[in-house]
Length: 137
Image (cartoon, rainbow, N blue to C red; front, side, top):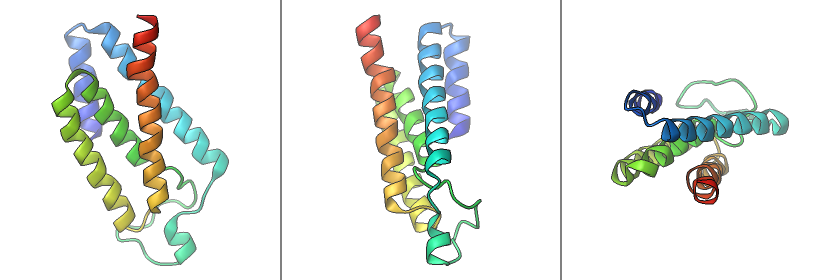
């Protein structure tokens, strides 16, 4: 997913689509920073801390579970790609949903963590990829 983001942003830069490049970079970057700050301030324990079970994905650091930053990142990447290439965005969105399921099944997150990660990506993506371009450009 992250390799796709790097390839996509490089494609936009090398094809000199500067407006699209900066919209993608700022929307994803500011959203990622906001999720990181929120997780730090709220500091919800991870599922394996509360249930005292061993996660299938291995132990991650404790706390900072809500919302899932992995799922937010995957979802915002899907929205960024889908902004210019809708069918490719749908395919990446399906991969983001698979990642969300893996994070829950793997014992690292609660369902609410991944759902809020997706919802936050939809909010940030809606503002960055739809509202701002339609209002100001």
